[in-house]
Length: 483
Image 1 (cartoon, one colour):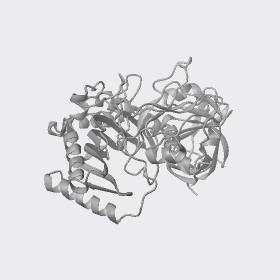
Image 2 (image 1 turned 120 degrees about the horizontal axis):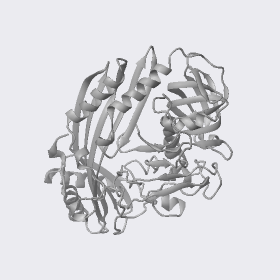
Image 3 (image 1 turned 90 degrees about the vertical axis):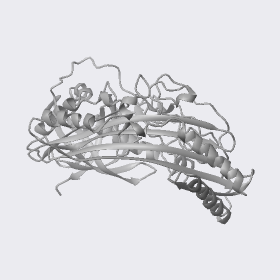
Image 4 (image 1 turned 60 degrees about the vertical axis):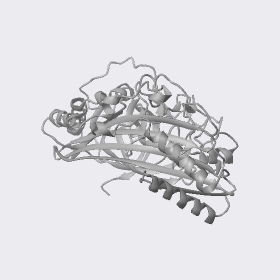
């Protein structure tokens, strides 16, 4: 990612120009909102312990949504010259006039200042909010990512490795015809890699607002230790097992809770398990969406959403009690509440959902952790208390069988071990599971939570979860992956 992708103020000027063009083309009665994003992503991939791909892409996207004579339409363009912007406005106005009446239009966000936090990226220079933005990450070059890949490969000690190191940068602005006008920028880095020994894979991944936080040698050593510990796995019969899920696996729980459970549209249409003020989780469970970051962590997201609503921390579950779901303006109107700042280009169809969820960690463990262990540090005290059960590193290919009860099926991967009397006694083959996620975290089912929440990247940039290890009383394993 080169220095010339860093922009300041250009997006806000573009957004204001489009709002003015809407007034010229459609008249003062049109309600218009414009989101302009300049996104840059650079990716260094490696396989067979060698870098095989180094790519970078940057693009500016202008999205317009307008409500005209009771009808709504949206359009987008990457052409930001005068003709391109006018074409976007004229196409969108024409589409609105051909659209059916929209009785669910929630109106525009009124002028509202951004929430200030000492821990978030803040906005561009003109807003005076630039607290946590890490410019070094935004300007990272291929050599910096390649250096971390080199360290990962060397630390794996000759094992076959594969994965990626990624840096992203976004500069965005929002303006609407009601007078809301905000801007912001963010940067993020992530590394995800595996090491392979005799057909056994070990994984290590980490996300951060600073590329400088990613240590390829530490991640490579962790992945290699897990791979070597996964040799000669045995098959176990299906059944309900006591488990310790490592942070990588817990991130999948947070992802599915977010997408389906705390989705404001699903909640408003009674397709979610969520019941506000109900004791739906174990009292040890607290979940918070933190798009502005916390605890000196650089923020993962912009300080406003695609409707210009300022973002702030949202407590989803406090001490086991469900407190909130995520809303854009449409789902909030349907549910009789206000937007929580979770609008996205797809939120009116898919529904708004939180994408920066943290599960609160437990107080610091009293037992010393073994840094050379293949077991995640926050999971070590948990397995020490387990008489017989499974340690599971990662879940993948998870699919929803029933969105209301959030019954999920999927596979384990990157390491499963049998634990007996507090010790890892052997590797276990991957297994399929079929499990209601809310049921797994219900009152009395959470036997322990790790003392550190790890920042983990999702498959998509701009989304990440902070997860500790989790000790659960029961996990329904329904078959062996081999058959």
